[in-house]
Length: 312
Image (cartoon, rainbow, N blue to C red; front, side, top):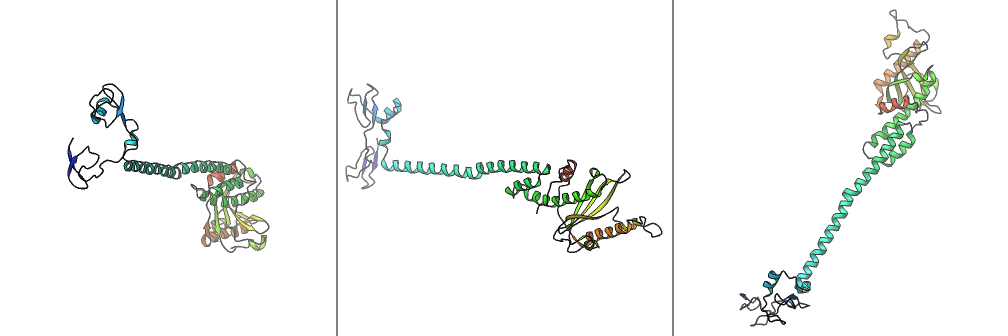
C-alpha cells in the first residue's frame, strides 16, 4: 500500500481509497456487480474487496489471492471501469471492420481476378483450338468476348487477314491440275487505291477497300513436277477475291532470251504484265496485315479452310 496525491485537491491519500477523505473526489468508478473470488483457506466465494473471509475469518489480500491461487474473478467484465469497457468495444469494432475491409479488398484484388483469369484462359484455349480446326467464325466470336486478354487483339487482327487468304486459296486451287499439291510459302497484303495493270478493266470492278494479295506458292505442274511462282489477287465486287494471274519470277529479265524475245510466246506477255503489277505494288502500295503462317499451313494440310468466310 502507498500514498498518492488526490487529482482534485492534491492532498495525500491511500492508493486503495475509493474516494478522497479530504475533498470527497471519487477515485474509482462504480462497478455494476460485486466480483467474487475463492478463499484460499475454505474455498468459499467471497467479495474480492473483503478484508477477511466471511466464512472462516482468513485474512484476505486480493492481489495476493489472485496470484497465489490463479483464481479468475467471477463476472470480471463487470469489474472493468465503464470507460475502459467502451474503449475495448470501440477497438474491437474497429478491428472487426478492418478485417472485413481486408477480406473485401483481398476478394477484389486476388480472388476475383484469379477466377476471371481462369475463365478467360479457358475461353482463349477453346477459341485457339477452334481456329486451328478451321472454325474461324466460332473462334472469332469467343475471342471477341475476351478482347484485351493476353494476345487476343493480335489474334483477332490476324484471323481477319487469314480469312482473306483462305478465299484466295479456294479461288486459286480451281486453276490447279492437282489442288492437293498446293503449298503456300508467303502471303503479303497491299493497300492501294488503284490497279497498276489492266486487270481491273478485263475482269470487273475492283473494290480497293480490300487489300491486294500476293502469294508465293508451289504446286505440281502438268508434267508432274513441282514449280514455284507468284499469284496476285484483287477483290472484285460481286465476285470476292479472284486470282488475276500467276508468274514464275519477279525479275522481268527472266522472261526474255538473249535476243530479247519472250521465252513463252503464249503466256509470256501476261506474265510480264503481272510481274510489273506486283513489283509496282511492292514499290508504291502500303504493306499491311499480319498472319500466323503456322496456323495457315496447318489448316491447309488438314483441308479445313474451304468453309472459312471473310471476317471483317
